[in-house]
Image (tube, rainbow, N blue to C red; front, side, top):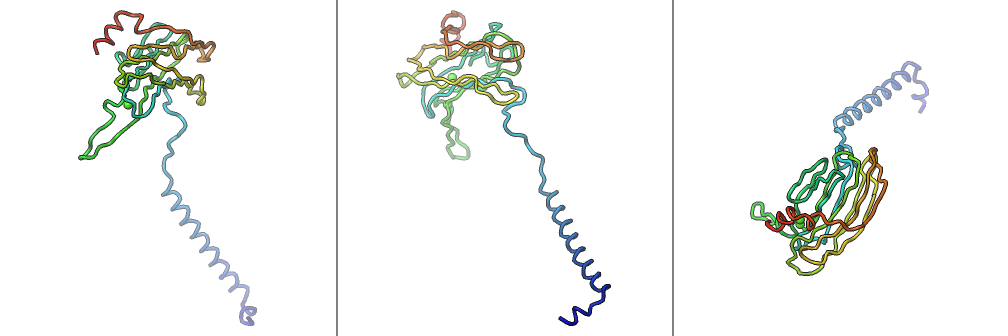
Length: 211
Ligand SMILES: [Ca+2]
Ligand SMILES: [Ca+2]
């Protein structure tokens, strides 16, 4: 203890410099490690920066029935399994119930029980949108409940509509929701009045029947 007290100020200074140097070295090393660990951040919370609205139809997982989502825009463009792109609308896929939900990779069977069809609006076009469901095929020969959701994606995800339709059997077409957009993309009106899009149109009906 005495020896320590007898240390000269210069020796104290050296010891302090050593500690400071070691601390700085430690910080430098931590910065180096931190920079290595920094990765480009993928922004989350947005499904697609180019989509303005998302319309989803979903029926129970593993269900064998084929339901179709059909959307008509204010100009009369129609998007459904036969025409997956029309106007600013796009259908992600034709989900045919359990059909095509299993694949085999390297002898291993992979299942995707999801039954879902999604239509996105890539831009805003003013007018009334009609969202319909078609019970296209019904191996179960039973009614099926379909959940429909309309979301506005920008500037943040906002639920515009969520509801259910019970489709009665093959060939049943029902309107889930109708909504009107103004030029700025605001929803100015909503209704559930039925409007047939496929069954009222002999050409489209023929296409549906020929599939
Ligand atoms: Ca379908
Ligand atoms: Ca499916």
